[in-house]
Length: 139
Image (cartoon, rainbow, N blue to C red; front, side):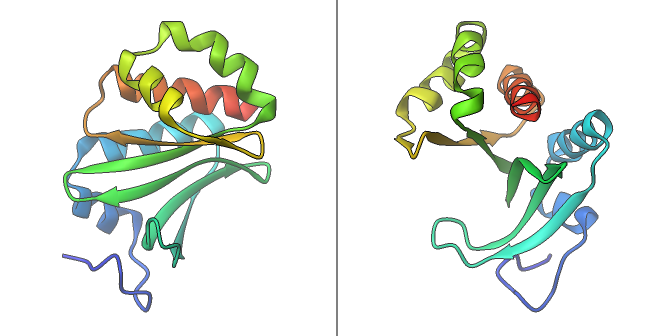
């Protein structure tokens, strides 16, 4: 098992997928790569909130999302900025109560909300997360 805190060893996407032990992780990465024709960037973060290796997806220099691997699930960080706010808020009524709650409870700072969404399965919250990324990609 890999140590995601070990900054001297950069894990592969497959090793991270094995660590999460979540089929949804592999599918989420595939969905983003296939939809936006981009590749992942595995980076080490010494951020106090979530130190360790993470997976970033960017399209044309714009961050789509950052994935923080966990044991048996993963957390997707999706930033809702000024450009996306109106479209995201218009789509919220069609999203799960869980995503609506995450959105409402996330403080806005500098015109942005940094949504941390825990995903275990390919459920409605998973689909909501992909919908937010789609809005972000157009912003």
